[in-house]
Length: 447
Image (cartoon, rainbow, N blue to C red; front, side, top):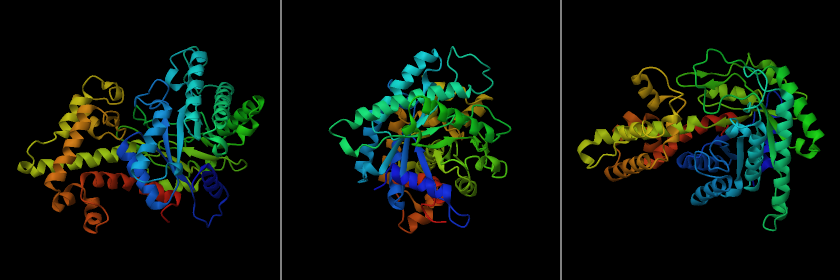
């Protein structure tokens, strides 16, 4: 059965592989979208592969986050989806991303850290095993040049403090009779230089890989702080460090991995047991994704690219619905509803990301790679429009000619009986097309 032990074995194979051996890695799905999660679980089931599902501190926290879920709620949510698909929940590793004072950085450092401590404790007690401790952000009363990263000494001390909170929560959970000997201690991801979650707000002109010296300084400061706090055992469970390999995406642009520019960085961990975790790998190509894994950036985070694929599928299905015309008594008006909802009472999820004329912003709300529409799918009106769309197409049937026109990548799989010609199955299959790029890079589906 897959576990954190399996994950460590995969990372060890990546770390110690010979040049002629295929690279191994893992991808981590960072999403709370139900259809994305279903697609991910079914993909892992098909590949018999490890599956990591993560929640961010913005999505899930003790105040509910933007999903309205606390850590135990997210655990129950994932378990319910896995159970509905007949997939053993025990095969899924839950991860917490950017856990730290991020949500409360507008408060004083002490208040933010107290909240961050409560956050990480809730995640660990809820069964999350992969914990990314991120204390890289300035809080309200932090001094220093905010054009530069927060000092390594400060981030390391705060990271160790949060790790201690995680370890205490783990010990408390392990002492519970219902858990007992089956409890696994959490393992940790460290790192202070990370891409902006969900993509950049502005169109950048250049993305530089992290300086190798910066990585070495970060690791040294973290190790010193952990050991000073008596966290030697926990330090042995630090498996990866987050670095910027030179990948990023934004509204309408992608920076693709250039292994020559990252060559020095890729070797900066050669004398350590650690590997890299790469964020913002969304929209990388099949080739660049494979290069990332080969160069030890072998924990690949993916999120918006999956909900973007869902949006593509739903919009394609809405276009098919319009073509069916008279066969649809009451159309879903999916695209119109999406625009209305995004312009409604909560435009904050996209306003600071999309710029330009009204027409350019309207275009971005539909098609931007940063995919801010993902925050709106749970909205009652938009969710109702999706349900109506799927119901209409299920009743009317999807002609293969229209499938070929609007979802050509799925035409042959449907003809061959590999994918059912139903709205939900088509959406899942389209999402899995993105997951296949990650699975291929990680060695789950062959080379």
